[in-house]
Length: 153
Image (cartoon, rainbow, N blue to C red; front, side):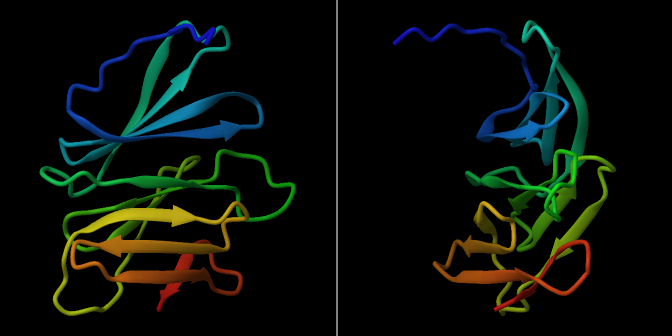
């Protein structure tokens, strides 16, 4: 009941999903799926009085209500913001590293390729589920020592 709007920021495009990504060394990142073909990464200052756009990452997103999920760091005790996994209209799941801003694209291999509209990740980040517009759900697990979520089933 005692909520207060601390900051308003504009991404310049319609939003379909907002996700908070905790950072061990300060305020959380705000991750926004934007209908201008991007995932926008914003960071608040320490006083929570200003949001700054850190990066816009390319993601096929113009029409559908795509969702994303925060993936915690890959190893226990690891510092950093982790990753964001997002569905995309081109049928891929994109996993973006929130430190280096590198991207890993995952494809299920299903035919036909249709838009992926939602992604969910376990708290430990070891298992991910993605769902497409045909109602198919794919499970992804982390494989070995790789730096990503792979092996769609």
